[in-house]
Image (cartoon, rainbow, N blue to C red; front, side, top):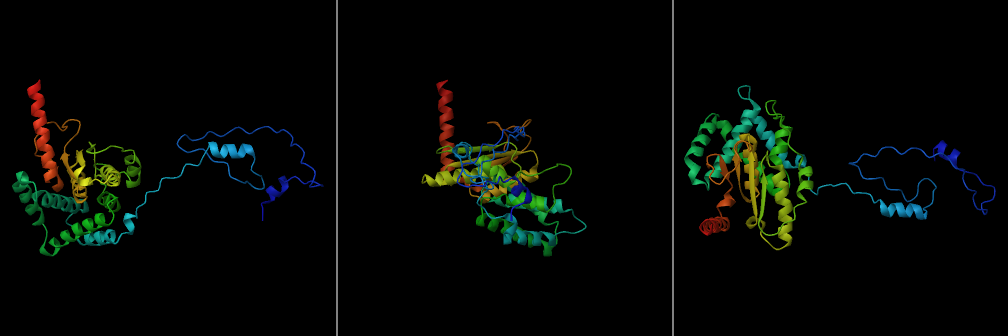
Length: 313
């Protein structure tokens, strides 16, 4: 049933065979100001009894509807590993320790354990830090941390195109007032990362990486392009990140390490402590893939090339 105002506007004719008379000229309504970030509205094929005219067809072809970007990925919150992580994390909560402190301990221990498998230059320092943290907890609580780590590994293995730790951080309401941290939604980062169009060696740098949502989106966007070209993405993507806050920087380090890409994260202020060739390695965290034979060879070649340039000058 049509609304009454539609029926009242319909012009009645006595003889349907006779052509309709020309409508009287009416005063055009002023156009409303369009919002610049929204695409122009397309003219529908048929609007309440109106037939498609050549002008309508021309407008349809000239002003197509811009499709909304919807990433093809399952929701993090629907994953069984998401609920498993939350359930195990809640078992660690106690009045003696803030949730953010438990989260920080978990992140630091995982980062130290991952780093110590390959980075022997920082082994003693980070092993000592790991033991100091784990010994703060009772034996009944210590076995929960490996379960948390297993949930992160399985979640990223199931769906690598997500910022699992960043979204979990926000969902657990750990965005404490000191830092006012709000992580960029992954689908926004994916939209930005889709502009990447490079070949061969791809270096991606984020000087304010946070938990790594931008870098994760860029990794997956570049990975798809490299795999379409028949290349192994692990040998052609180098990730470089930096953040002033150690907690989120290590969250980024853990996630890009689990995505099996070469790279390193520096903890420090990108404005006052930027990465430089002669920089101290004290606050650097290198992913396991960074120590692979392929990237070791690349660094060796790069060193020789720099030496040749110096001799030439």
